[in-house]
Image 1: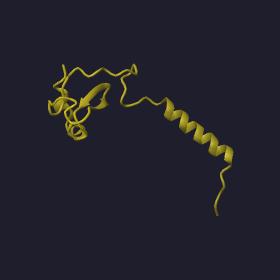
Image 2: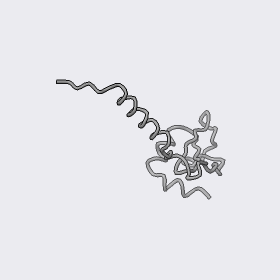
Image 3: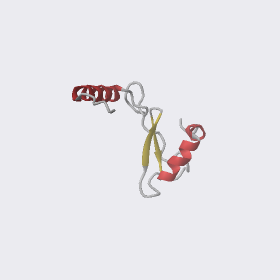
Image 4: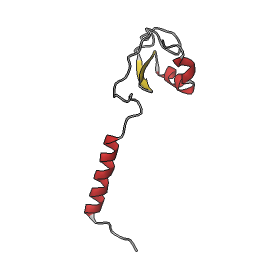
Length: 89
């Protein structure tokens, strides 16, 4: 036997979930909500010019803006971020 949930309960639950998601802190932000700008002129992974592969790719990692020369560099960075973060001043 199926039980029908009243519409108002479904609506209240959805509103609660949406409100909870909206107030949850973003993983890609610093506690103040601002990211630190990228200090290098080169890709953090390959040391190539940021525009050498058609356009830079920007990501935020633990509140820091990181820029790459291409999308494959993002995957290489994510595999071992500590190795590349050591390049930052």
